[in-house]
Length: 202
Image 1 (tube, rainbow, N blue to C red):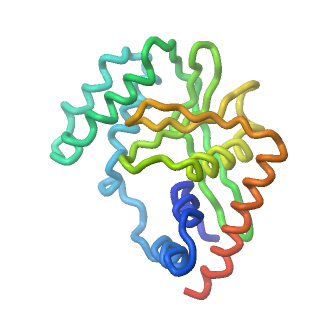
Image 2 (image 1 turned 120 degrees about the horizontal axis):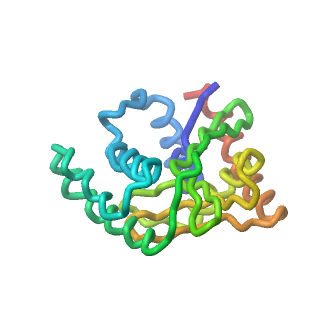
Image 3 (image 1 turned 180 degrees about the vertical axis):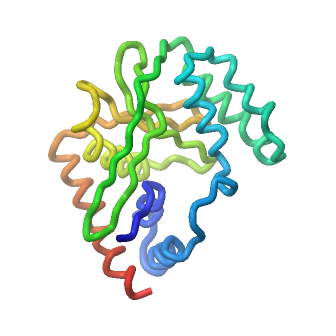
């Protein structure tokens, strides 16, 4: 059973025609995941560690001391600054995260929010978006709909599903009513049906 990521789903939905088929082909035949090629892995893990250990905001920048990759050293500070901006004066404590898998037409989507935190008394599950590419509304809606659908049943009461545009310090929260969520999930399922139909033919 093919397994794809939230990012894969958004990339597929964002394209049409031949580029959509090309993206599915790229996903099927790409190299297996390697931590060495995951550009933002050290920063994601550092942010998680900061909250798990209840360290102060001013230690976020310490991750730069452990880097040797010049591209990371040049790129990370903007993301760190954006995360500090979002953190601001909020009281944030670790509340553990968890993952889920959404399956449709034999396609699995791994849904893995990095942060399970309580922010000013409210529980959140937060997906970190670290890329420099603009976070379009479609991308936000698809990610949040899948998070809300797949994670809500196992989350704490009143838990908010969110995606954080780290560089811009902007948090987007899921607030879909049942009709809106159903509409978004129908769109996702249609795209997954397309992926499933194409997968064995390429």
